[in-house]
Amino acid sequence: MVSKKVTIVNETGLHARPGNEFVSISKTFSSKIEVENEDGQRVNGKSLLKLMSLGIKKGMNVTLYIDGSDENEASEKLVELLKNLKD
Picture 1 (cartoon, rainbow, N blue to C red):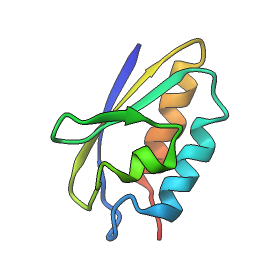
Picture 2 (cartoon, one colour):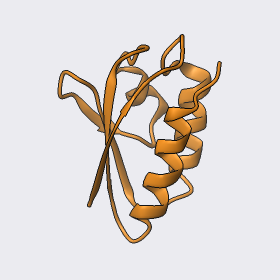
Picture 3 (tube, rainbow, N blue to C red):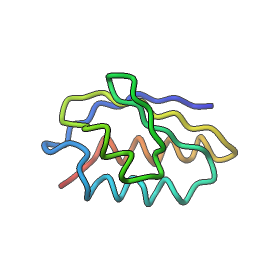
Picture 4 (cartoon, rainbow, N blue to C red):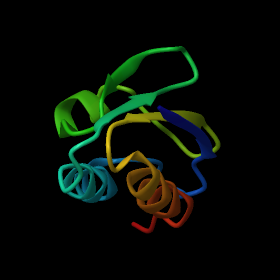
């Protein structure tokens, strides 16, 4: 299992458009992907509705938990995406 903490720098946080991109990339991996907000709420990273329920805004830290055969590749791609979110 890999866990990575990322600070959201996008002005509008992780809303529907970048959230959909995150989910789309997550679904290309076989690993289990979970996203946790600062309150400790952890959800399936392959579900846009669940991801949106976290209310991730600019400046918040999120932790990715990735477990599976392609966990390293998945963590690299998803961390890179979160660090470079654009509206």
